[in-house]
Image (tube, rainbow, N blue to C red; front, side):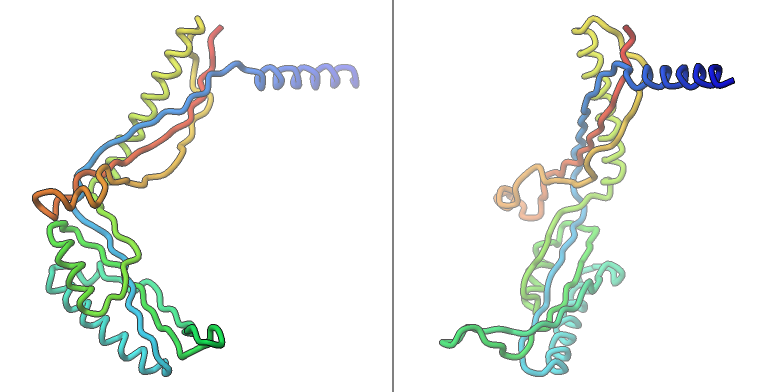
Length: 224
């Protein structure tokens, strides 16, 4: 009985070892799709400095109200104006004796999403005049981003298959089934044109194009 059990265990181990030693071709595939932006995302900060937190909050609320009212007038939907975060921290100033605390800094982050791209320049000018202290982030967006990534993913898979077939041909072997496949990287649309180049265009609201890319890693079995 022990001898039979030993033979069975040895056979299973032998089969597993053979499977682990399967010869494969491993390739990376890439795909990219260009889209024309039709919207934008803007993250800004409103900030107040002073000695009394309650007064700082009142001033900040007043500025926020002015900014929101202006955005609504420009056609931005209320649901697309989000207060992201409120931060309160000591305010330090430089003195002959070094850095010393002087009141507080109260800041509020606001995220603006606009599905129309033609007014992005007017919106930025307007909110800066109504209390916004700085812009943390700005990027053009496209309503086709999700479908663009799916198309880029298909192109990446085709690219991987093409690369693997080329390598197999040069090696004098044929491709077998797909052993494993995984995505690499995420959907991060990148501008094809730099912002300063876009501003030189005859129309300041022309965004150029954004590129959505995808990457995959694929392993193919080799038929000897």
